[in-house]
Image 1: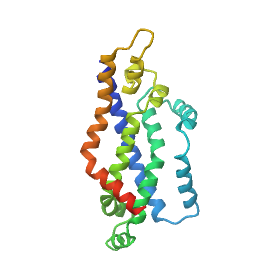
Image 2 (image 1 turned 30 degrees about the vertical axis):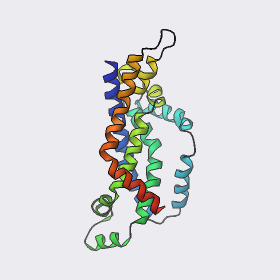
Image 3 (image 1 turned 60 degrees about the vertical axis):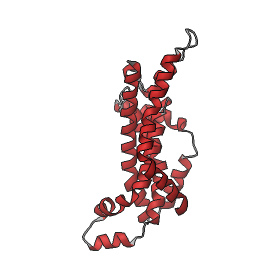
Image 4 (image 1 turned 120 degrees about the vertical axis):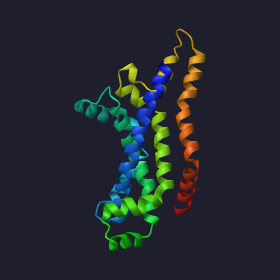
Length: 214
């Protein structure tokens, strides 16, 4: 029961964080790559710096914010927390691809009557499939493996993820239930394996292209 419940909760939180992070990163990275404004370089530097800092620095701030919004003990708290931590990484990756795409495509789409949003959605985004898959896959695996977030933001055991249930099964006082631990360990990695094997071609293309484009 706990194993299947944890699997469902992990899947909900991982999918939610992945969708939010990927969708919000697209317009943000497009704006940093295409538009010129005074704070552009400062924002890029800020996103790079955030990747060097431990996520624990923002736990208190996020907890207070979720508490005031009434999101604690709901799926939304870990979903938004993991998405927030993953967005800077996705922006950095996607911006590299946007910079490599010729601006002439934007100008041609504008001549055809497309505004900025239509150009982004119908012209640019279809070309970004490998990079989008890479960002989404990284976000999904990070969220699926997250232990600290669900443990801090959720108090209801019915909403705990696999990682939390797995840790709760390791009780040194009463002994380890190895059959349960092994079963939960296997189930916890199944979603990441399925997602990776389904998207491995696009993921490898994205990583290879990113290495070439620099």
